[in-house]
Length: 296
Image (cartoon, rainbow, N blue to C red; front, side, top):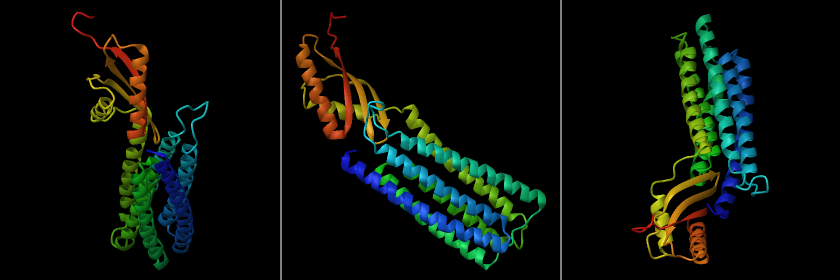
């Protein structure tokens, strides 16, 4: 990803983050007011769930800001993984919200507590469903367009809140017939949130731990190398390291054993520069002698 894409990624991160903070704070105030007016514990809890989205959006903004910092002496590969750390924080917050939701729902079942919602609660909850899904669509599209994991994570967080509000809205109409529906749906929402949290944590952790390079990458690198050296270089042992939008690639290639050191270095340098120009990947090449019959 080049400088233009990095700039777009940063700009999208700030736009989505501030939009999320503003909308979620307004929704929190509206739902909290509706919860107090109707005496609904569920809507008050959902309001706090919405406020937690503002907190995670702040995490996204901080992560995007840190990721945009260039490499320095202490961090020679840049600060791109700060965004992954932000995604992990969001995943953990989602998990905490889900567990608290389960506890509240179980308590309602034990106390045989039913939901009682008024007109204000219906309007506030419906507005939450609509606005949260809009935020989710914005964050997910921006995240996929720029491959920003924290934006995608924040998008799923918005969607989880929209789902929880939708479940509460369903409970408004079903609650008059089924006293337990609010608590049952609360548990169902918790499972949806936990699933989303697991997906976010698994993807971010996988990137931090390190992933296998794309199977087609070796073929692509081979084609680039072939432009600068006619013979087969037997490219192998590829390791790709991701630091946000900054990628570092190391691999081995083989040259005839009689190749002079200066010539081998020049070949490797040309290939490294071509990989950077074509793929935006910083490559480091380890040279090996090509084994021929009788040469061990």
